[in-house]
Amino acid sequence: MEEALIDADIRKARTLPSSWYSDDSIFQTLISRFSSEWHFAVHHSDLDEFNTIPLTHIEEQTKEPMLLTKTENGLNCLSNVCTHRGMLVASEPCNGKVLQCPYHGRTFDLDGIFKNMPAFEDVVNFPSVEDNLKQFPTGEWAGMVFTGVEPSKTFDDWIRPISERMSWWADRKQMERDKSRDRDWIINTNWALYVDNYLEGFHIPFVHNELNSVLDYSSYETQLFDNGVLQIGFAKEGEPKFDLPKNHVDYGKSIAAYYWWLFPNLMLNFYPWGLSINLVNPIGYSKTVVKYHGLIADQTKVGLGAGGDVDLVELQDQEIVEACFRGMKSSFYDRGRYSPKMEMGVHHFHRILTN
Image 1 (cartoon, rainbow, N blue to C red):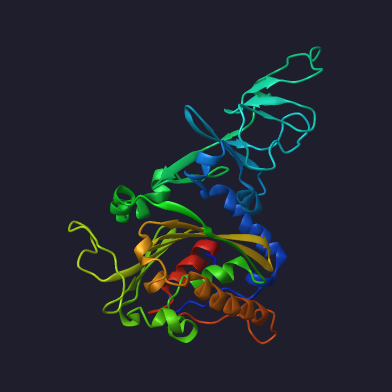
Image 2: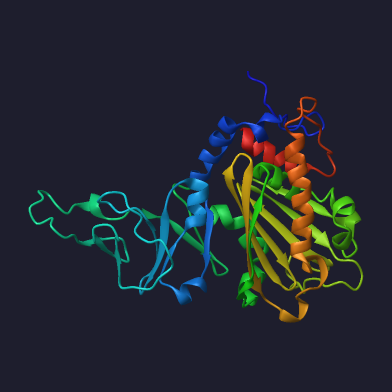
């Protein structure tokens, strides 16, 4: 029996080989798995402004052009590739009653069904179902819309760890989309290094002085589940914390932040002020775009506590992960060891990547 690259026993395990961060062929193999996962598409409020939105950020991850449409019957996630000659149907968010390819005018309704095509009157056996736009599955939770090319799990199974623990949030919080908090960070590092860093609070006292001043570092928790990790940050005395319902598993605890990660690249950071959605999009093995979307639940708590300055924390993390990427190219480093107490999340991620 072949020995696992990452031992299941964290006490014995060694970290990923450096080549997993610096080899393009390994990178291509890893991101091929993105097509079998769910991905954040938009917040529902984005569809109040436009009824057609190209999902270019998902194309960056899966290489599959998609678009989202809103109709009277609900939402559709469709292929953004015209069934005539492969042209992209939509390049910008827009409003319209139909989808029309800008190349030769082939038209579809907002459900992706073929409607019309100039100069095709003499084509035999046309149109057929193959002339419709491919439809992809969608799922919604707490105003967030998700989709995927061919997700290996049902949406309910995938989102369940979050939907069960955060149900009180989805039920009670009316979150307002705040586009001033949107960011596109371009970072010279491998996407998996960025995820590694996110999945441990070990570095907080060394890298994030400001964050460390408001968190009770000694109480920091990491919890693992099938396709992700939950980290819980606890508030120091007097710092903002969640007002949890009495029937909640965490009732009575001074929780400052819930940091959720779902494989491969979704991060949902819940704070008393609201939610920061982070998407880690690999552009190549050496470049990553991290997208932020902000949702406000309580304006009076913005700028306070663990989520008080997410930009500062991000920039501090970027400096670390870019330096680590340079270190991965060293002839004198290949693999390290895990702290069983502090790096369970990183170990879990590496096990998912390699199994």
